[in-house]
Length: 100
Ligand SMILES: [Zn+2]
Image (cartoon, rainbow, N blue to C red; front, side):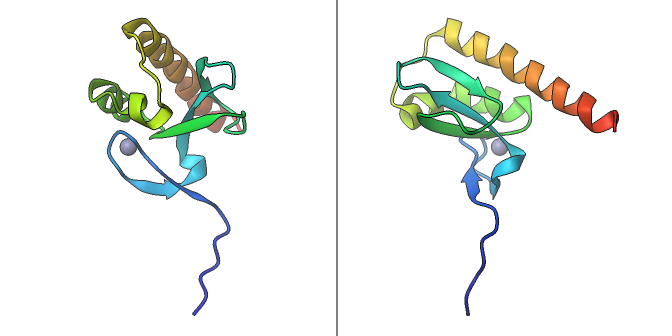
């Protein structure tokens, strides 16, 4: 039996749930070492994924999961900045779903 995989799956570094790539938010370590939210999920660099909800980000941040996933040592400033960026992204996504 062959399984067809149309969409790649990813695993949340917060809760460990695996699922469709599109239902996750990607955090990327860019080639020049910056850590950023990657709304397109296509940026170059090592990525880590969390579910599209701030709870999983908080969980992953509290447990320092990004450090091992991205092989960096994130400072509190970075974590605060990423959290704001993710919140902004999530509210933008929610708005675009409502305004079809
Ligand atoms: Zn999750």
